[in-house]
Image 1: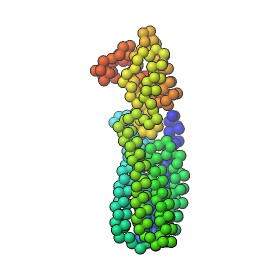
Image 2 (image 1 turned 30 degrees about the horizontal axis):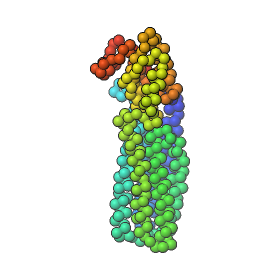
Image 3 (image 1 turned 90 degrees about the vertical axis):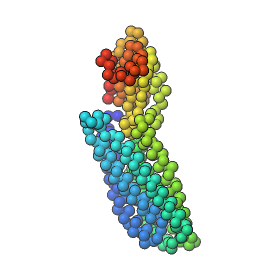
Image 4 (image 1 turned 135 degrees about the vertical axis):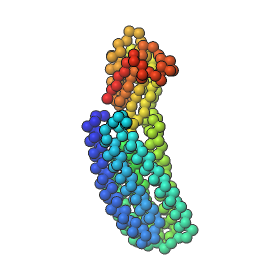
Length: 309
Protein backbone atom coordinates (compact mmCIF):
# COMPACT_ATOMS: atom_id res chain seq x y z
CA UNK A 1 0.00 0.00 0.00
CA UNK A 2 1.52 3.31 -1.01
CA UNK A 3 2.07 6.20 1.36
CA UNK A 4 -0.12 8.40 -0.82
CA UNK A 5 -2.99 5.93 -0.58
CA UNK A 6 -2.56 5.70 3.21
CA UNK A 7 -2.65 9.46 3.61
CA UNK A 8 -5.65 9.80 1.28
CA UNK A 9 -7.59 7.13 3.20
CA UNK A 10 -6.62 8.78 6.48
CA UNK A 11 -7.94 12.17 5.34
CA UNK A 12 -11.18 10.60 4.07
CA UNK A 13 -11.65 8.73 7.36
CA UNK A 14 -11.03 11.87 9.40
CA UNK A 15 -13.51 13.86 7.31
CA UNK A 16 -16.14 11.12 7.75
CA UNK A 17 -15.56 11.09 11.50
CA UNK A 18 -15.98 14.86 11.78
CA UNK A 19 -19.31 14.70 9.91
CA UNK A 20 -20.56 11.87 12.10
CA UNK A 21 -19.38 13.68 15.26
CA UNK A 22 -21.25 16.84 14.28
CA UNK A 23 -24.48 14.92 13.68
CA UNK A 24 -24.19 12.79 16.79
CA UNK A 25 -23.12 15.55 19.17
CA UNK A 26 -25.89 17.89 18.06
CA UNK A 27 -28.67 15.35 18.41
CA UNK A 28 -27.30 13.90 21.65
CA UNK A 29 -28.20 17.08 23.54
CA UNK A 30 -31.77 17.01 22.24
CA UNK A 31 -32.12 13.32 23.08
CA UNK A 32 -30.87 13.74 26.66
CA UNK A 33 -33.45 16.46 27.29
CA UNK A 34 -36.17 14.41 25.61
CA UNK A 35 -35.31 11.31 27.61
CA UNK A 36 -35.60 13.19 30.89
CA UNK A 37 -38.89 14.83 29.90
CA UNK A 38 -40.54 11.59 28.73
CA UNK A 39 -39.18 9.48 31.62
CA UNK A 40 -38.10 6.80 29.12
CA UNK A 41 -35.14 4.62 30.09
CA UNK A 42 -34.97 3.24 26.55
CA UNK A 43 -34.61 6.80 25.27
CA UNK A 44 -32.08 7.65 27.99
CA UNK A 45 -30.12 4.51 27.10
CA UNK A 46 -30.15 5.67 23.49
CA UNK A 47 -28.92 9.07 24.66
CA UNK A 48 -26.16 7.34 26.64
CA UNK A 49 -25.13 5.48 23.50
CA UNK A 50 -25.16 8.80 21.65
CA UNK A 51 -22.79 10.19 24.27
CA UNK A 52 -20.42 7.23 23.88
CA UNK A 53 -20.74 7.63 20.11
CA UNK A 54 -19.58 11.23 20.39
CA UNK A 55 -16.73 10.26 22.72
CA UNK A 56 -15.71 7.36 20.47
CA UNK A 57 -15.75 9.54 17.36
CA UNK A 58 -13.63 12.18 19.09
CA UNK A 59 -11.17 9.50 20.22
CA UNK A 60 -11.05 8.05 16.71
CA UNK A 61 -10.25 11.49 15.27
CA UNK A 62 -7.52 11.91 17.86
CA UNK A 63 -6.10 8.49 16.97
CA UNK A 64 -5.88 9.41 13.28
CA UNK A 65 -4.15 12.69 14.09
CA UNK A 66 -1.65 11.06 16.44
CA UNK A 67 -1.09 8.25 13.93
CA UNK A 68 0.03 10.82 11.34
CA UNK A 69 3.04 11.78 13.46
CA UNK A 70 6.32 10.68 11.94
CA UNK A 71 8.52 7.99 13.43
CA UNK A 72 11.28 9.25 15.71
CA UNK A 73 14.24 7.92 17.67
CA UNK A 74 11.98 6.65 20.48
CA UNK A 75 9.19 5.21 18.31
CA UNK A 76 10.78 3.89 15.15
CA UNK A 77 7.49 2.39 13.93
CA UNK A 78 5.71 5.70 14.41
CA UNK A 79 2.32 6.00 16.11
CA UNK A 80 0.20 3.64 14.02
CA UNK A 81 -0.55 1.46 17.06
CA UNK A 82 -2.43 4.34 18.70
CA UNK A 83 -5.36 3.52 16.42
CA UNK A 84 -5.64 0.08 18.03
CA UNK A 85 -5.50 1.54 21.53
CA UNK A 86 -8.40 3.82 20.58
CA UNK A 87 -10.43 0.86 19.30
CA UNK A 88 -9.80 -1.07 22.53
CA UNK A 89 -10.79 1.98 24.59
CA UNK A 90 -14.03 2.37 22.64
CA UNK A 91 -14.86 -1.29 23.30
CA UNK A 92 -14.25 -0.79 27.02
CA UNK A 93 -16.61 2.21 27.03
CA UNK A 94 -19.33 0.18 25.30
CA UNK A 95 -19.03 -2.57 27.93
CA UNK A 96 -19.48 -0.03 30.73
CA UNK A 97 -22.50 1.58 29.06
CA UNK A 98 -24.13 -1.82 28.48
CA UNK A 99 -23.62 -2.73 32.14
CA UNK A 100 -25.17 0.57 33.28
CA UNK A 101 -28.21 0.15 31.02
CA UNK A 102 -28.79 -3.41 32.24
CA UNK A 103 -28.66 -2.23 35.86
CA UNK A 104 -31.10 0.62 35.19
CA UNK A 105 -33.40 -1.72 33.28
CA UNK A 106 -33.55 -4.01 36.32
CA UNK A 107 -34.48 -1.07 38.53
CA UNK A 108 -37.17 0.11 36.10
CA UNK A 109 -38.69 -3.36 35.81
CA UNK A 110 -39.19 -3.32 39.57
CA UNK A 111 -40.66 0.20 39.61
CA UNK A 112 -41.92 1.20 36.12
CA UNK A 113 -42.36 4.99 35.76
CA UNK A 114 -44.97 6.75 33.64
CA UNK A 115 -43.78 6.95 30.02
CA UNK A 116 -44.71 9.71 27.52
CA UNK A 117 -44.84 7.50 24.46
CA UNK A 118 -45.53 10.04 21.69
CA UNK A 119 -42.66 12.35 22.63
CA UNK A 120 -40.45 9.29 22.98
CA UNK A 121 -41.47 8.14 19.48
CA UNK A 122 -40.72 11.49 17.79
CA UNK A 123 -37.28 11.84 19.39
CA UNK A 124 -36.32 8.23 18.63
CA UNK A 125 -37.39 8.67 15.00
CA UNK A 126 -35.10 11.67 14.57
CA UNK A 127 -32.33 9.74 16.30
CA UNK A 128 -32.73 6.86 13.87
CA UNK A 129 -32.34 9.20 10.91
CA UNK A 130 -29.16 10.69 12.41
CA UNK A 131 -27.74 7.21 13.04
CA UNK A 132 -28.44 6.03 9.50
CA UNK A 133 -26.65 9.04 8.04
CA UNK A 134 -23.71 8.49 10.40
CA UNK A 135 -23.47 4.82 9.46
CA UNK A 136 -23.44 5.64 5.77
CA UNK A 137 -20.64 8.15 6.27
CA UNK A 138 -18.49 5.74 8.31
CA UNK A 139 -19.16 2.48 6.48
CA UNK A 140 -16.35 2.72 3.90
CA UNK A 141 -13.57 3.29 6.43
CA UNK A 142 -14.86 0.55 8.76
CA UNK A 143 -13.84 -2.11 6.23
CA UNK A 144 -10.13 -1.25 6.41
CA UNK A 145 -9.53 0.30 9.84
CA UNK A 146 -10.21 -1.06 13.33
CA UNK A 147 -10.38 2.50 14.60
CA UNK A 148 -13.12 3.31 12.07
CA UNK A 149 -14.77 -0.05 12.77
CA UNK A 150 -15.00 0.86 16.45
CA UNK A 151 -16.64 4.19 15.62
CA UNK A 152 -18.97 2.49 13.12
CA UNK A 153 -20.02 -0.11 15.70
CA UNK A 154 -20.81 2.67 18.18
CA UNK A 155 -23.17 4.33 15.70
CA UNK A 156 -24.53 0.96 14.54
CA UNK A 157 -25.40 -0.02 18.13
CA UNK A 158 -27.10 3.31 18.65
CA UNK A 159 -29.14 2.76 15.48
CA UNK A 160 -30.41 -0.47 17.00
CA UNK A 161 -31.20 1.46 20.14
CA UNK A 162 -33.28 3.96 18.18
CA UNK A 163 -35.20 1.12 16.53
CA UNK A 164 -35.82 -0.44 19.93
CA UNK A 165 -37.07 2.84 21.38
CA UNK A 166 -39.46 3.35 18.45
CA UNK A 167 -40.86 -0.15 18.95
CA UNK A 168 -41.22 0.40 22.69
CA UNK A 169 -42.96 3.75 22.18
CA UNK A 170 -45.50 2.19 19.81
CA UNK A 171 -46.24 -0.69 22.19
CA UNK A 172 -46.54 1.61 25.21
CA UNK A 173 -48.80 4.02 23.35
CA UNK A 174 -51.31 1.33 22.38
CA UNK A 175 -51.10 -0.93 25.46
CA UNK A 176 -49.85 1.21 28.34
CA UNK A 177 -47.27 -1.45 29.24
CA UNK A 178 -44.53 0.84 30.58
CA UNK A 179 -42.34 -2.13 31.53
CA UNK A 180 -41.67 -2.66 27.79
CA UNK A 181 -39.42 0.42 27.98
CA UNK A 182 -37.02 -1.26 30.42
CA UNK A 183 -37.18 -4.55 28.53
CA UNK A 184 -36.14 -2.89 25.26
CA UNK A 185 -33.34 -1.01 27.03
CA UNK A 186 -31.98 -4.31 28.39
CA UNK A 187 -32.24 -5.93 24.96
CA UNK A 188 -30.20 -3.07 23.46
CA UNK A 189 -27.48 -3.60 26.04
CA UNK A 190 -27.32 -7.36 25.46
CA UNK A 191 -27.39 -7.02 21.67
CA UNK A 192 -24.32 -4.77 21.65
CA UNK A 193 -22.13 -7.01 23.83
CA UNK A 194 -21.08 -9.68 21.24
CA UNK A 195 -20.02 -7.03 18.70
CA UNK A 196 -18.15 -5.14 21.39
CA UNK A 197 -16.35 -8.30 22.45
CA UNK A 198 -15.30 -8.97 18.84
CA UNK A 199 -13.84 -5.47 18.53
CA UNK A 200 -11.97 -5.83 21.82
CA UNK A 201 -10.66 -9.27 20.84
CA UNK A 202 -9.34 -8.00 17.50
CA UNK A 203 -7.67 -5.03 19.19
CA UNK A 204 -5.98 -7.16 21.85
CA UNK A 205 -4.84 -9.64 19.19
CA UNK A 206 -2.99 -6.85 17.38
CA UNK A 207 -1.55 -5.44 20.61
CA UNK A 208 -0.20 -8.93 21.43
CA UNK A 209 1.37 -9.03 17.94
CA UNK A 210 -0.65 -12.05 16.88
CA UNK A 211 -0.75 -13.23 13.28
CA UNK A 212 -3.09 -10.79 11.47
CA UNK A 213 -6.61 -12.03 10.75
CA UNK A 214 -6.83 -13.43 7.24
CA UNK A 215 -3.12 -14.29 7.10
CA UNK A 216 -2.30 -18.02 7.02
CA UNK A 217 1.20 -18.63 8.33
CA UNK A 218 1.55 -22.08 6.76
CA UNK A 219 0.82 -20.67 3.29
CA UNK A 220 3.47 -17.99 3.75
CA UNK A 221 5.91 -20.69 4.82
CA UNK A 222 5.07 -22.80 1.76
CA UNK A 223 5.47 -19.77 -0.49
CA UNK A 224 8.91 -18.99 0.90
CA UNK A 225 10.05 -22.61 0.62
CA UNK A 226 9.00 -22.54 -3.03
CA UNK A 227 11.33 -19.60 -3.79
CA UNK A 228 14.21 -20.88 -5.97
CA UNK A 229 17.35 -21.33 -3.90
CA UNK A 230 15.67 -21.64 -0.47
CA UNK A 231 16.44 -24.84 1.40
CA UNK A 232 14.59 -24.15 4.65
CA UNK A 233 13.22 -21.30 6.75
CA UNK A 234 12.95 -20.53 10.44
CA UNK A 235 12.08 -17.69 12.84
CA UNK A 236 9.10 -16.65 10.73
CA UNK A 237 7.09 -13.90 12.44
CA UNK A 238 4.12 -11.97 11.06
CA UNK A 239 2.30 -9.22 12.94
CA UNK A 240 0.34 -6.02 12.37
CA UNK A 241 1.35 -2.53 13.43
CA UNK A 242 -2.23 -1.39 12.83
CA UNK A 243 -5.15 -2.28 10.58
CA UNK A 244 -3.81 -3.36 7.19
CA UNK A 245 -0.15 -2.62 8.06
CA UNK A 246 1.39 -6.09 8.28
CA UNK A 247 5.08 -6.77 8.90
CA UNK A 248 7.21 -9.90 8.57
CA UNK A 249 10.65 -11.15 9.58
CA UNK A 250 12.17 -14.49 8.53
CA UNK A 251 15.48 -16.34 8.22
CA UNK A 252 16.09 -18.12 4.90
CA UNK A 253 18.67 -20.91 4.66
CA UNK A 254 19.98 -21.13 1.09
CA UNK A 255 20.83 -24.11 -1.04
CA UNK A 256 24.48 -24.47 -2.03
CA UNK A 257 25.37 -22.20 -4.92
CA UNK A 258 22.29 -19.98 -4.61
CA UNK A 259 22.72 -16.28 -5.34
CA UNK A 260 21.63 -14.21 -2.31
CA UNK A 261 20.29 -11.11 -4.06
CA UNK A 262 18.24 -13.19 -6.48
CA UNK A 263 16.65 -15.11 -3.60
CA UNK A 264 15.91 -11.86 -1.77
CA UNK A 265 14.25 -10.30 -4.81
CA UNK A 266 12.09 -13.36 -5.45
CA UNK A 267 11.12 -13.74 -1.76
CA UNK A 268 10.12 -10.11 -1.21
CA UNK A 269 8.26 -9.93 -4.53
CA UNK A 270 6.32 -13.09 -3.65
CA UNK A 271 5.39 -11.73 -0.19
CA UNK A 272 4.11 -8.50 -1.69
CA UNK A 273 2.18 -10.04 -4.58
CA UNK A 274 0.61 -13.03 -2.82
CA UNK A 275 0.17 -11.77 0.73
CA UNK A 276 0.29 -7.95 0.42
CA UNK A 277 3.15 -7.83 2.94
CA UNK A 278 5.45 -5.01 1.88
CA UNK A 279 7.27 -4.34 5.13
CA UNK A 280 9.55 -7.33 5.62
CA UNK A 281 13.03 -8.10 6.92
CA UNK A 282 14.67 -11.20 5.43
CA UNK A 283 17.90 -12.65 6.78
CA UNK A 284 19.96 -14.87 4.51
CA UNK A 285 21.97 -17.76 5.96
CA UNK A 286 24.26 -20.34 4.37
CA UNK A 287 23.44 -22.79 7.18
CA UNK A 288 20.70 -22.89 9.82
CA UNK A 289 21.77 -21.05 12.95
CA UNK A 290 21.35 -22.56 16.39
CA UNK A 291 18.84 -21.24 18.94
CA UNK A 292 21.23 -18.69 20.39
CA UNK A 293 22.26 -17.61 16.92
CA UNK A 294 18.60 -17.16 15.96
CA UNK A 295 18.10 -14.74 18.84
CA UNK A 296 21.33 -12.87 18.17
CA UNK A 297 21.13 -12.98 14.38
CA UNK A 298 20.30 -9.32 13.94
CA UNK A 299 23.53 -8.40 15.68
CA UNK A 300 25.70 -10.72 13.57
CA UNK A 301 28.09 -8.60 11.53
CA UNK A 302 28.27 -11.26 8.81
CA UNK A 303 24.49 -11.58 8.38
CA UNK A 304 22.89 -10.27 5.17
CA UNK A 305 19.61 -8.40 5.49
CA UNK A 306 17.05 -7.04 3.09
CA UNK A 307 14.39 -4.53 4.16
CA UNK A 308 11.51 -3.98 1.76
CA UNK A 309 9.13 -0.99 2.01
